[in-house]
Amino acid sequence: MTTFFYLSKFLTVFLFPLPICILLALFLILFKIKGFRNKFLASIPIGLLWLASSFPICQSLVSSLEKDFPPTPISEMPKADAIVVLGGMINTVSQFPERIELTGSADRLTDSILLYKAGKGNYLLFTGGSGIIFEQESKEATFAKQFLLSFGIPEDKILLESESRNTFENGLYSKKILDDKQLKRIILVTSAFHMKRSVAIFKKLGIDVIPFPTDYRSLKTGMNWETFVPSTGALDTTTISIKEWIGIFAYEWKGFM
Image (cartoon, rainbow, N blue to C red; front, top):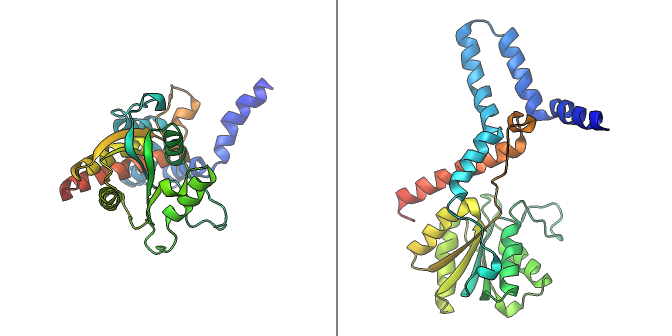
């Protein structure tokens, strides 16, 4: 059984699409492309893809976003007027709209429910419309309301913002609801990698923010086989991290934060 375990770990990797494509590309570069210059140029995108899909790179990037926002136990969180949860955890274009399909950022929604049930906020405000350019009809807030109701959150304690399409609009449109309800202090719930930008936006809008980061992507990764094998999971984390840093620079340039 031990031999089978190790063989399954080593050999099945070479059946996955990403490692196969990288290895095939390297084979073609080494044996089919002629000339050092051509080999070198062809190896650049393959090398970048390998690096982006490795855990040392993805973990370095995501840790740079999460390091300033360590987790806080719910019991230690102070009370606020409202719990504001940023969307991005519900699949609004599922083939089965009668089901609520949560994505990898589901902790945002489930932790906001735990915070409410622990009495940390009088209201639970969900902010999120549709960030899909050609699919603006399916609003994430609509699905979120169904999910919150199914977990026993009273309907009169649920506040919905369904027009925002990005993080800045999350803050801008949420502020209008908070002002109308005269809610001053909020607990802001979003993914740890997304918290730096989110907190800065809400504070810039004059909102008193207590961050509650969740959905951590940082891992304990030592030097082992899986660390350097190309992984779609690592590539996804690298992509998320690069997108977030671009968002931070863009929002700073626009004066949103």
